[in-house]
Image (cartoon, rainbow, N blue to C red; front, side):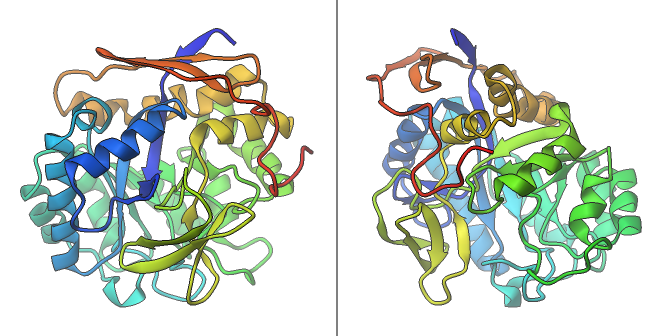
Length: 356
């Protein structure tokens, strides 16, 4: 592979030991995380803030926005933010690691208040369309230039279709945020797979989605509507151990998963986006050019309408790849980074699902 556009991560809660949800993140810490992301080929990302009470959401967004503006790489790489919650389904299985007590009916005034305290836009927001008020809020958010995504939801086929008709365009980490025991057909996964107006984000780590599930899900969505995301949290690009994420303690396990220390349930991922690309290729789910496009062209295309409303277009960035799909060089604006060749990058990560 010679080169491609830079990778775009639509959902990243933290990286390389840095928690974007801390409420105290510094510009230096953010630059540390973004440098680590450059090494994985990511040249654009949406730092993601998860469900919290209003005062905590405001504090976390204020701190994150200040860090982006004061950092070296933030203005180049972070055009805005992804707000995942708080209008999500609080029931067990659907809520994931999000605090259910902070989940509320839709409140447009809260979104307006949060946007008013930051200089960069909320570009994406994940909602559960069955929550009271969400369906009416979706077109208002779209009119403000936001990409509305569906996630942590128990929505039926009819509700998903209505949300898409109202302007929703994305499924957040499809296949996750759903109880283990659910109806075999009438469930939100099938409902979103069947909705052609929705693109879908997939965490291709073999932990959140086994290959046997990811393969038919990608086929159902089609190449153009399939997007690779990481949902990375603090333990991504980090050694095994304990980390803090949005006020919670999480453990990076030997298999590469991130789990709540208290319950052992999944809490974000430790996946890097270049590894997601390599995994998809190693699992024979897509050829290299398509796998890279699912992490670069496809998410950028989804974002373009929102980005067009925020001002001058941002740099696409360029990634030079080795034949084993490891990142060799990254360029974005005046920033240029060269990386030593890594061995074994052509295979799936140890402990992850093996090629199909």
